[in-house]
Length: 172
Ligand code: NAD
Image 1 (spheres, helix red, strand yellow):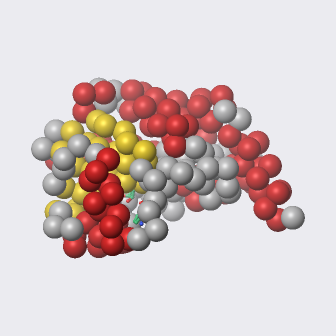
Image 2: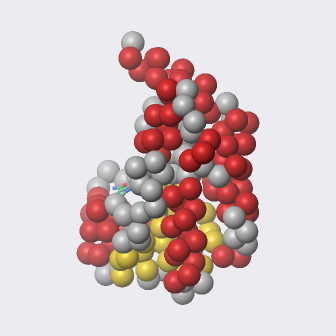
């Protein structure tokens, strides 16, 4: 049995890892869609799909999750919400179960005939992409919110200075 989780993962954080581990208690394999794959280099979406694939692959390995248990698929957005489920299904291995805390994702997959589960949120006030990016911009401790391997990827790609530079450009 396969389950799907779609997320922007800007960046991958501990909440994503917790929910993936939780999903793998229910299903044999998890399909992880990297949402809004076309977006990067903005304050809300600073990282490319490829960088997010790298973060996730390293974080799953760090957490002892074997590659045979997951598929990571970048998924670009489409202009029409009503055809998004078909677009996702075109790109992914077959699945029945969908896991999402996002109400639009829940609604679209429910209407598409899928079984949708709302997984519990883990420390959502801090384990959120918004909070990680806020801390990066404010020079606060963002490293505590992401797996060590994600921290290493963000340092390798100089992600914090990218985000800080983009925030200066956007206020001009
Ligand atoms: P996200 O990275 O914020 O969250 C992804 C999932 O991770 C959540 O649904 C939630 O289940 C889980 N999660 C996040 N923080 C957690 C925590 N602290 N504890 C436990 N679980 C946690 O991403 P998102 O915004 O939900 O991503 C949805 C994606 O789907 C976006 O890229 C969006 O553009 C895309 N989408 C596109 C269309 C379209 O193209 N028309 C339509 C709907 C959705």
